Length: 267
Ligand code: FBP
Image (tube, rainbow, N blue to C red; front, top):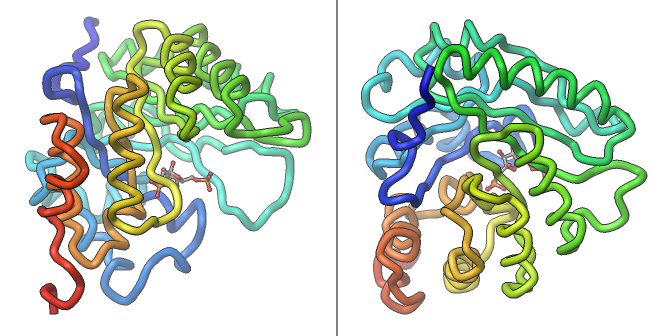
């Protein structure tokens, strides 16, 4: 079956919203509003995101209502940050179940360099082939991690991880950023023709985050797959608009900043 990446991109660029942090980081990332999955799903719909990334349980209980409003990207593996074992993200959902739930793509974390790497690669290979049989693209979180990885976000390490993503058959890569723009161009190059989206990471001040977004795009990334910098923001839709201006319209940071309400105005 032919893969359709176009439905997840606008003119080769994309912006996904991620909300798998309840599993990956725990409720500490949320407040009384944002802990409600509908809060974040509403942002994805109103913000017209190219995809919403969630785990199976959220999709089963909440996605039906959003089914034709925002493309579902179902994360097939995940872990908590409680167990301090060698980095390994167990599979909790099959490709078949993702298809039943209406997924238009699946997500899978690969901890590059983990002592569990052999098992992770083997699982990814099976998932990738199965997903492709259903015509679903596979988005790989290429996260170098574990006792053999010295610097998770050095250019060399990220470049290696990007290349691994290409060689293992990922259709889209989701990776952390390194603000060395020239260096990051090499990371993007190592991914070949696989689009690379950057994670947002810890919440930053608006200007700093939008500058980072511009740097990400200048380095040749195809967009972002982010969570906290949007749904932890007091004006998630304003921040969404600002991000889109930079990603899709190549606007300046100053122009994009005007989309975001300041906290006083919001109240
Ligand atoms: P953020 O934009 O909030 O960083 O989300 C991106 C993401 O990849 C999530 O999908 C995931 O839950 C989290 O970061 C994993 O981060 P880490 O493994 O570094 O704790």
